[in-house]
Length: 180
Image 1 (cartoon, rainbow, N blue to C red):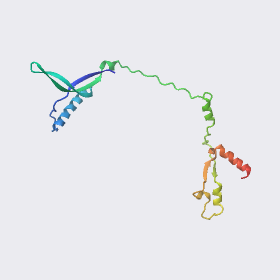
Image 2: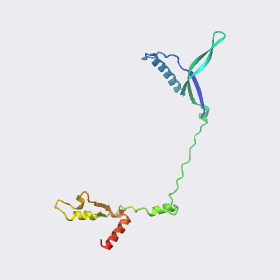
Image 3: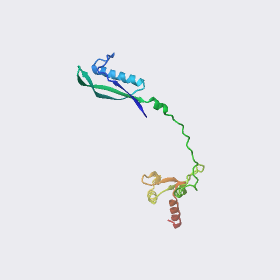
Image 4: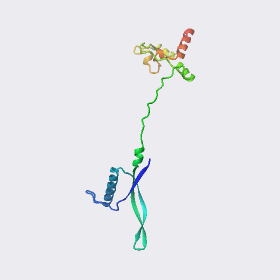
């Protein structure tokens, strides 16, 4: 993008402004007024510069004077007009791949995914109680004791049958066959 620049001299002293008393505040108000005026005309403040300037002093002599300048810029009008945005075409959305189109690793992952419970069927629950919890509950059962679930160290868990891993169900069937 191309820009055009405008350089204006910075004020040397502050203008009188209503409600502003000290010289620093007057100077700041003068700079602020210049910057706001330039901004309303479309110029963006860039920086201030202090540059040397050689001026005549008398008939034959020259003296170097340092000038404070404010630099503004705005986009070049010809460059902005030459910019023509265009509308992009909407993206093409492909259909999701079928299992035959998936790579072998994804097919393997899909085949081993756990089946989701059917919301139409109520889930059966199984209470899993360890052997130590059974031993603790049986010998010293008192009328206030409600069994292994009331004891804080007894691991009694309730889980839906559909979510039990196949390893546990296989182990349970082996233990049942052995009579343990």
